[in-house]
Length: 244
Length: 244
Image (cartoon, rainbow over all chains, first blue to last red; front, side):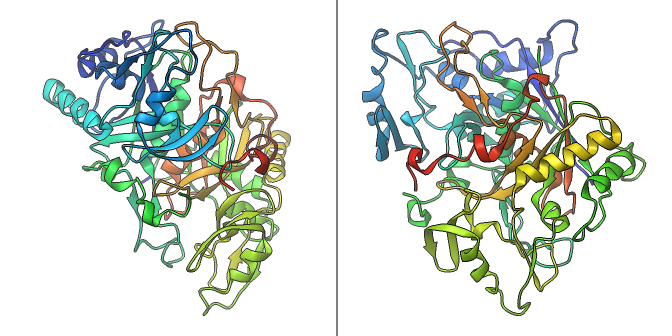
């Protein structure tokens, strides 16, 4: 069977504040959010919802007040949220966060928030994804997968891409070990990180400046939809990592 | 305006051999390739075609004969195709290729080829993409973008994702510097590598074992469609790289 995917932006999410019922806001945006005279995206069994880390952090109250006039006021937070500094050049800090992510500035962001706010990553993005997923199932009787996505840089290549910080209801990595290629030989490429590819695909319709925090990916292979965890399945243990 | 994307696998590409007219084969597969009673994907202005590096390398004659009984017979080629070794552990070599890519085994692949063949990366994947694009425009009067994609690992995270080795007719990196966020402040995230996100999205429908070498992505923002080059725009100069 061939997979055909649709990637649909979900408009209509309100500005998210601490304590908000984010799952309810997402349901409402999916069922009622429209642009011009378009049809709402809807919610269907098997949909993969990709949700921006930013609205998850906002709903979970991960805001920290900083001096709005100091562009470096969040730097002490970067150190506080890190367990190890990998590289430092000028103001740029590449560190390993408490969660095990390696990224710039411990994922702390000051864009798309008030000038006196720095926004930390969710404490546990797998848990955040699971809560949204469970709430959607509970309230709409629809079984979806949820990915919490953020924008990370990477070594060697310019430009950023979106990756998965957490997920629920989807396998983070597709394990093809033991699978044969078209010629009957065992595959060299054995593990594909589908949640990172899905997060990046969603970024293409979410963009950075148009305030679209959620995208729906429709049509994924049902075999991918099972319990999974970014923290357990993607983050490479330092002992197996050649670049720490 | 909101972007909605469709990601469509293109069935029907034949086994590709050295010297084949790959552009012609891709056109034929897009216009006539079907599974069951489906409609062919077609070719439309503004489509982004993501083409597997493997079929590009095959058409360009990048096969090298190796001892089929020696699983390490391609290792001398890895060194020959590299300008610098970054890491080495057991049989795994992470190196910088002549093109500037940092990857495992210099991108040399022995899956989905005959047992006595090792397949090298294209010499110039931007040029490969440009040739396919130009041929499609010349023969079908359709202006598409082309991305040549391969599957790479990355530090810190398990699982592989597809990235762009070359492109034509699309900006590799979307430069958002000077763009304001929804609150009117200048964006922190300034450069998004859309060709890598598009390559990864295409992988989701191409898969690794079902022999689908081409996918069409339909619906991308027309503003992204301009001349670009992975080699010039994505590969980070060693002097600006913190991880070499």
